Image (cartoon, rainbow, N blue to C red; front, side, top):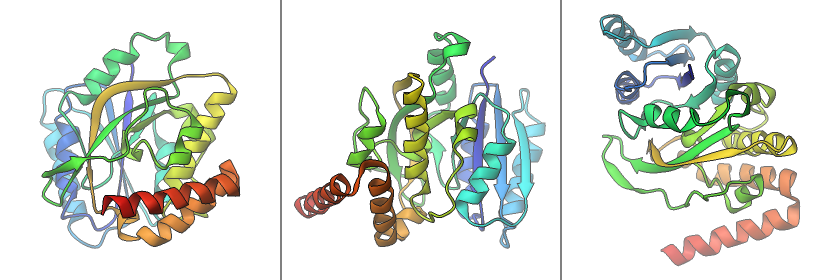
Length: 260
């Protein structure tokens, strides 16, 4: 039976963690491992996680929850820990404040994947994303549209698929851990490397045509927008060459001015 690992990385997230924990708890699909990686939070995050674990034990069909609590070297180091500890067929990163779009999200994705030969399941499963505010209220659909046919070169146009709506087969996730040289755009680099590895082996990516995630608009990358853009330019230059990278970023600037 197909199994998903939902990885939630936290640090001092008591104001937003409940929404994420509740979203995982509400999933109708039963074969879910929830892997919580906490970097030794100093606020009430752990109390909220403990209550979540206790409530899960009282449910009729509990998810499997595992907790790792230890210091880390930032977000991407914690994500690497999740990848190395995960036991599912696919790993999904759903961090504090983010949630699945619907209680049936994983059930619907699993139904689509069951149509594949288990030995030839797609490396990447992807979908759309909605943006929400600190209260979980809908703000807007994500501006970048998800292509029907995804390729690594698609990411020369930016992060076309939100990280939280980019599900990766665990064997490929482990083969391409996050590069800790990056602090803000490591997810962008990781997605490209995963896709390129799959493309070299002529393996597929699957569009769900679903809104998969409600994403908290004020994430770490958003708060550090300028530094994130500089890092993203470096990632683009590394993967696509400096001339295409610079031209792409020039277009991003023009696009931002036009939207104003």
